[in-house]
Image 1: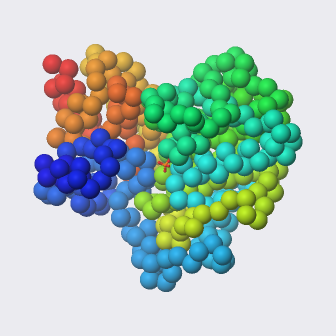
Image 2: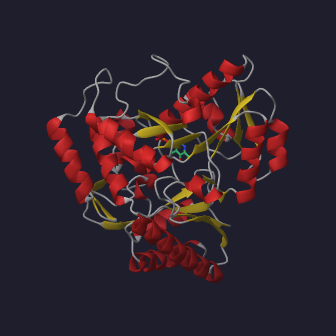
Amino acid sequence: MSYKADEEKYLLTVYKRYPVCIVKGKGKYIWDDKGKKYLDFLSGIAVNAFGHCHPAITNAVKKQADTLAHACNLFYTKPQIELGRKLISFLGCGKIFLSNSGAEANECAIKIARKWGRSINSKKYEIISFEKSFHGRTIATLSATGQKKMHYGFKPLLKGFKFAKFNNIDSVKSKFSNKTCAVIIESIQGEGGVYSADKKFIKDIEKLCARYNALLIFDEIQVGMGRTGNMFAYKEYGVKPDIVTLAKALGGGFPLGATFVKSKIKDTFTFGSHGSTFGGNLISCAAAIEVLKLLKPSMLNHISAMGAYLLKSLNALKEKHGVIKDIRGKGLILGAELSIEAGPVVLECLKKGLSINAVQGNTLRFLPPYIIQKKDIDEAMKILDSALADCSK
Ligand SMILES: *Cc1c(COP(=O)(O)O)cnc(C)c1O
């Protein structure tokens, strides 16, 4: 394919791409350059939560692009303030820092945790993270990521990260000390293979954080913004994280990250502590304001209902195909662990007109847009059924 050869000439080949060039998207479908249509159960990795080119988002973006795309953060701008106000109305007392991506949202969280820890004592800088976690690709967020294969070649990494076993409170306890300034956790490890944290585990972590005077950071970059059927995933656990990071779905397809900090630490950063030229880009903010308007309670109910139906449908396929070992996740982030390689199944689905992806080599991940209906799930399951039959021969 010429795309492959051309990309290899001009772009660093860090992505293992599918042999398809996407040129158009509308709602729950995407099209390639040959006019072939795919049902999109990946949503640009949890980004296009309301499908492609949603009219409300597209109109807001066009209007903002026609008015002011960028002013720089030396000025006050209305879309940033409006977005901050809206996010705070959902997240509660605190403040927001706006950036451009998930990694940047976490980078900001790590810096705040360190600065806050150091304000208590100079040794309080350790952050506990988890095995199989994913927090981003910058050096600090890579250092926070609990996957050795991603660390390869980049050492020395940033000091001060400790990795505990997920869903194992004794392991977390063993990492805690008075040097701990924060715990960073995904309530569902998306890139790690779609593993959910137990309710008690998270509750116990919150207690440990209180005992050791450490911050609780929820990385909701993949699972926040309605993905699990709740506006934010932490609400399912009855805990109150000190920091919540958001990105992916937040910008409705435009680059945007947000770091929410609770009131108690809102003064940790002062003038000059942090910043970003593009952070809180006005077009991205205009899109995000529309995303928040679309996330009505009825939409959250729809996500839960569709999630339950997809889970049931995947479990039915599990009965039929011995190669499905486990189904995991919640709402519209679900994973199916296979006893065979997941990559060929993904490619077979693509050939048959369904876009999904694989994580950790053996797990199919489903991240459909929130606007799907039962008939779309039925269609996706038909394709998956046939792809699994082909691949397990
Ligand atoms: C995607 C993701 C990130 C990184 O976001 P980028 O926008 O790719 O930098 C961080 N944490 C989690 C949980 C993610 O899913």
